[in-house]
Length: 299
Image 1 (cartoon, helix red, strand yellow):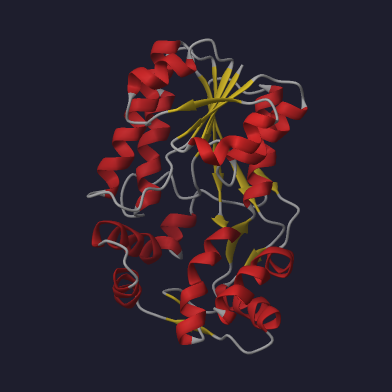
Image 2 (cartoon, one colour; image 1 turned 90 degrees about the vertical axis):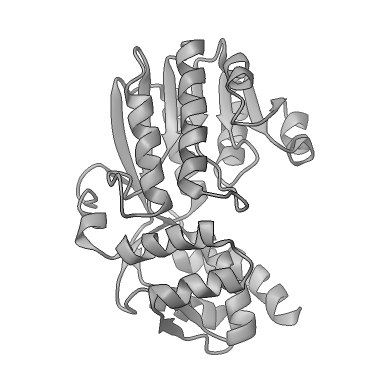
């Protein structure tokens, strides 16, 4: 039996469907039963509960061969790092109590940094907690920047006509589609071919800059949507102005401040320990993002 945290999310849903198609028993954990109806109809079992609830997780994990773990985003917390550590602790305690033998853990590129990388540094602590559990074989997936994060610039495009981020226009980095991340996770869960604790990086087919993304989006929009380099302070102010709390916006400002640094990139090398996905950024914009963009521009 497999347990998938965030089973209705960007990666969890794809993983669940792949495991079900392979004839595996799957339990998905979700806070909202209504979002899981299609997966339940396909044969998944549903466990509705809060990841803070260690007793709930322990009961759900008991008997599992493997768990897919993650710390889901939550945009109304009073302190981002505290939330991450609380969820990480709850997951780790439950895995230990339930004596789960295998975990595939969704982490992030940059999670080798205990401080200085905003929410990504919070994932360092989840990795370390899982690494200390006796008898647990854990594979940490460290993907790059999700293509799907671009949905966050839709309001900016609608109201300002630009894409502004605190990065140099020519800075190229690892973008990746969540489906490609999920496919790696699903295959490793099926194979269970990892021991002790290890790290697997996941990248898209090539590196892109935000200027590249703006060019693809301009083509999809049928008009110029230029990329503009902002400051970290401007980006934090913009997030707060859009309704995101300072408790969330400020750690993301720290993340963007470190994102293009040698320190953040030090542990990533495309030539070693990297699985490359199939979906390009151009394909994502053309086949998926374009429709949300059209809705934003019309609305």
